[in-house]
Length: 318
Image (cartoon, rainbow, N blue to C red; front, top):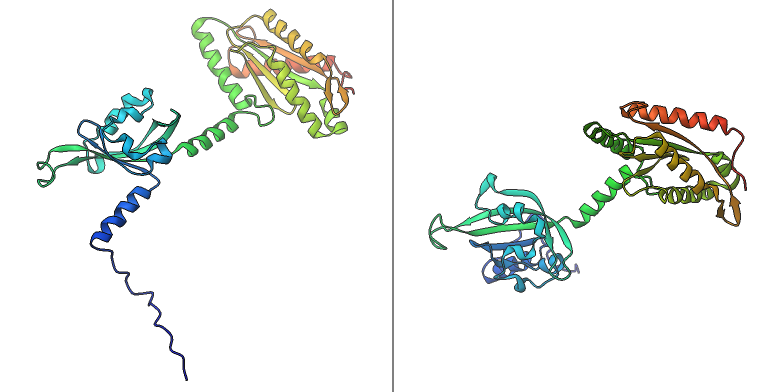
């Protein structure tokens, strides 16, 4: 005898829509559980509705915001540009979309980056007089993690991964800015190129991990020789550069070069080995050696290689 099987639902049959009181409960659940902050403001900018996203986004229960002005959750410096968004009266294509703001977490005051879409609400004759402005409905999407990743990528694009120093691209940008300021103010600037003598022997003899640790130590020592407004960059390999803005005297550049040599004179203690390194430094000063980025970099590079030729045979030792 054949066994009867319950009829399987056909996949092409439409799913019946939820209606009646159940539909309202479902809609309330969906809005409250949405990951984006949904809110309604009255005509004076006070919260009349906030969904459950306030808990994770702002660190507070939605009910605590009701009756409060929107400025209570804004980072103060963003208030001027936020006013139009939170008092949005426009509808349709003219309404606010994609405005980036920072909200302030009620729990700890930490800023939260959000992307806001807002639209004006008007009476329809049943809810308020027809055409009367009633307030604003908006949605704020959390962009905090995106902003952190964006900042990380931006940092990595302009900084050396090993030492954390500015890379060649950022160094050149700061050099261009310093030159522009120097032309306006009539001051000069100084550029130093530094190259470690015999560093290839360290990598070949002790390995690249040891070489990397030494480069990080070199960056730390050189940084202690400079002012806060100076820029130390790693151009690549064992090459470093220093920018001394508004410091256009060759004697000053040579004094900094002497401090850098002295800082690197002490041995580097790595894995029980005492590694000694020499350094060759070239100095270029504007406007004496040129008033363009290209001219200064070329002069500093040439001066550094002249110094390296004089130091031939003075390599690393351990």
